[in-house]
Length: 157
Image (cartoon, rainbow, N blue to C red; front, top):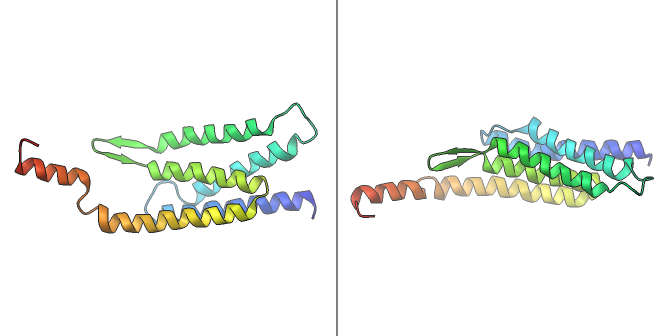
């Protein structure tokens, strides 16, 4: 298969995997949705392809340095998504989703397609199932509201 076709398929797979996780985030009402996560996964794959294939003939270039910088860049973007408000932290799961999807993009970029697919499946299940679990069991009386109720009844707590 020609190299350009393989690279194109990698990029398309990255878009699909990022879109899938973005769909879960969007359906959960989060800021970063399908486009954002598809772009992050696409970008991580593209940078990885550039690192692996673009400098193949130059032994002085270390492709792992480019790949490492992907994670640093995503870390800055993720930090901008996290909001602290009194007793709550918002955006942490979305930031973590960006970070892990950049890892999926790297995985696809180096040609580990099955690992990328399986990992995305696990991430989707984790986000989907854990959100349902939290909504059902943890959000009704979370730790802060339980402490506030306890404080009102027993001022010495």
